[in-house]
Amino acid sequence: MTEPPEGPGSWTDSTAGRLVGALVAPAPTFRSIARRPTWVLALVVFTLGFVASQFAVIANSDMQKVRQATVEAMEARGQTVSDEQLAQIEKFQKLGPACSVVLAPIICLVIGLLVMVLANLLGGELSFHGAMGVVTHALMPMVIAYLLTAVVAYAGSGNLDPTELQRSGGLLTSNLAVLAPEGAAPAVVVVLASIDLFQIWALVLMALGVSLAGGLSMVAAGGIVGLLWVLWVGALAALLTAFGGGAPGG
Image (cartoon, rainbow, N blue to C red; front, side, top):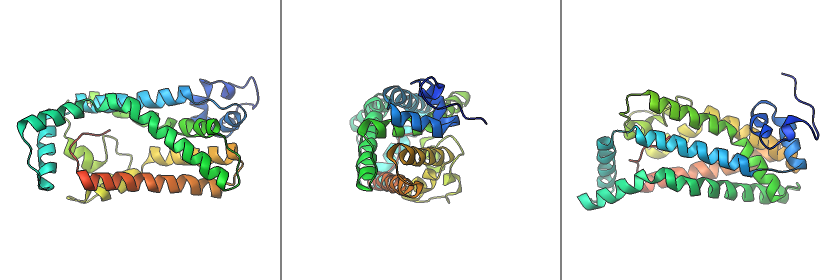
């Protein structure tokens, strides 16, 4: 497709236009972000998409299966749970989407800060606002994934099994978790689920954005993004290994 002209007046130079531009015309969009960084609207859109997917999955999950999965996960760690404790855990699980309103922006801010620091250490020139502009707009493919997850959740029977969702890597068959063998360790499932069409799309966009906005080669920018991805997947795998599953995910 023909890329839009760059510079003031181009639709990729508008705050709203960049949300679509990151998906269909990433190079001029990230160059525009380098000239005039914006990221608040993209962060809001990403957060709302994430919250919507979490709410849709929880609202359409079989709560009896959620309870059973929670008990089994705790018993696997040698813990017993009373009805009162279980009620508190279930209440916290239902508050997951509300917590995501705070958690998603914090994660984006941390990633933006790390991208800025690493890019500058490698000889680039990337401000915090520039890094946040790149990170938040590169996450637009994930917004598509979150919206598709919400649609699939509401289009189903309203009887989602959290254990099956965790084993399969979510509602969308866009990752390699569907190839995980029966009884695979949670860490293995996390790694396979992270090899995902939408995540790879977002990672490629982020590397391109860091390269264009930070003045780095694609190899250096890809190294930064790849390192952060490995750390993120490793942290998720460690958390699941330590605390087990049970809560439904998008």
